[in-house]
Image (cartoon, rainbow, N blue to C red; front, side, top):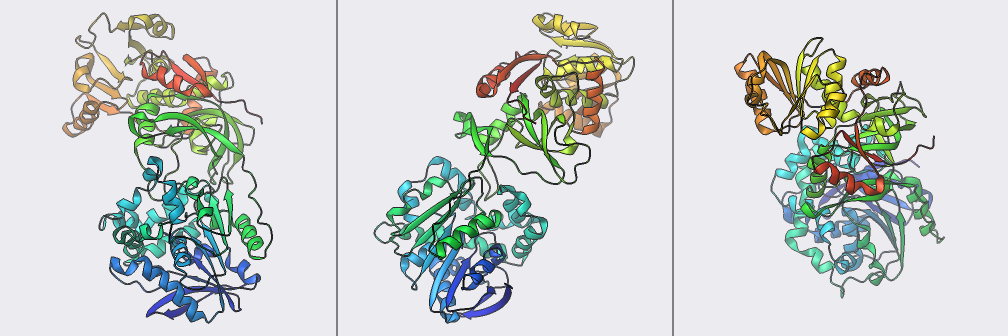
Length: 620
C-alpha cells in the first residue's frame, strides 16, 4: 500500500497528514514527542490492508501542520478537539484511534470525554491517567519524569535539544532505544529536521507546559469521570526509561473492555522498534482474534544502582542484552574489575543524575572486561566470533560488569595467551593508565622514575612497565607493601609511613602520582630541572598546575593522564605480558553476586593490586 501526504483543513488549522487506504472506517494514528507522523510508517500499510482508511496527522506544531504561538494553544482541550475535527473532515462513519506517547495522552482524553463515537482504542506506552494516579508516583517514577518540570523553564529546553540542528532530539530516541539498528541516521534525520524548523521545539514543548499549568491531567485522572467503555488494547514496551510498567496495573478499573500486552526487552518506541510484533497484535485485535503474547526475551544480569543519592545501593538486575553497532563486538564477559572511578564517579552519577527525557538507560557499572566475542558488527575487521579479548571503554555510563557487553573494536585487543580471564580483566584501565603516563613522561632506557602509590592497581603496573622500558624505578608505598614493590622490580622503595620523601631533594626525570594526592608544587624538589610530573587527575590542584605549567612554560612540566583505550597500546601490553616483563597483581577476587563486597574492599584504599569480579564462563 502506498503512503501519500495531503493537507487537511479542520477548525481553522491546516494538518499535514500521511494517508493510506480507503473506506468508511477511519483509523487515526497519533504520534508522540519528539516524533512525527513518520513514526507510524510500519502500521499504515497494515491498517489499509485490513480495510481502514488511515490518517497519521502531524499534530499542531509538528511537521508542516499549523504552528500557533502561545502555551494556551496547546491545551489538552484544543488537542482533543483537533482529532474530532479531523474525523469530521474525513466524512468517515467509524473511528479507531492508535496512539503513542503524547498521542496516547490525547487519545485517553478523547475517549474519556467521548468527544466522538469511538470503535476501538489502541494505546502504546502511556498509562490511563486515573490508573496512574491510583498507583501513585513513586520516587523512582518522579525521578524518571523530572524532565516534565524541566520543560516548564522558558527557552532552556529548546536550547538544549535544538543545538547542532536538533541533534539532541535524534540522540534522545537513539540512546533510549533497545534496538538502535531500528533508528539509523536516515530515520533520526526525519525527527531532527522536524524539530529544527523555526518554532517547532517551542510548540512541541508547549504540550508539556500547558499540561502542567492548566491542571487538565488531574481532572482526567478523577475516578468518577475517567471510565472508558471503548474496547481498548494497551501495548507496553517494558524497557521504557520514562514510564514504569507499574503505572498500567490498575487500568482495568477504568476500562471496561481491556486487553494488555507487554513487550519485554522493548523500549518506549514500541511501534518503531518492534513493528512485526506490534503489527501482529494490532491485526489480531482488530480482526477479533486472540492477541498474541510477545515472545520472551533472554535477559542478562548486569550491575547497576537502585535508589537515589547516598542511600543508593549496587544491585544486579535483569536487562536486555546490548545491541551492537557496525564497529562494535558483543562480548560474553568472563571477568571484570573494580577501579576507584567506578565508585567515585560512575556509581555516584548513576544514583544522582535523573534521566534526560527519553534519554538515559540505567547506568551499568564497570570499565574493564575480559571475555569471548559472540557477535561482531559488519565493519569489524580484526576480531572473529570465538576470539578471546580484553579491553575497556572509558565512558561515564559504562557497562562491562555484566554478562554481556558491547564495546568498540578500537577499545579491545586479543587477550594475552598466558593470562586467565581474571588476570586479563584486571589489566586494561590500570595498565593503560600506567603505560600512557610513562609515555607522557618520555620514559626511556636509564630514566629515573618515582612512582607514588606503587602498590595500587595502577602503581604495580607502572613499576613493572617502567622497568620494562629500561628505567630505574623508585616506588612509594606503606611499609607492609615494600616487599611486594621490591619483588615486582623497584630498585628502591620509600615507606611513606616512616620517611618524608616529599620533603627531600632528588633528581628524578619523572614523578608519576598514581594516588592523585600530590601536585607539581609538592613534588618539584624531587625532580631535576627538566623533570615531568604526571598525575592521574583526581587532584584539583594537580590539574590546575598542569595547565599553569603550560602557560608559564616552566622548565619542570606537569601533565595529567586521561586514559585512552586503544588497540595499539593494549597490544603493547599484551607483548609485555607474554614476554613475562609484567604480570597482574591481584588483591582479591569476588563472584558477581558479591559485587558490594568488592566495592567495599576498593573503598578501604588498602587493596594491593587489582580487585577482580568473576562473572561467568564463556560458552563459545
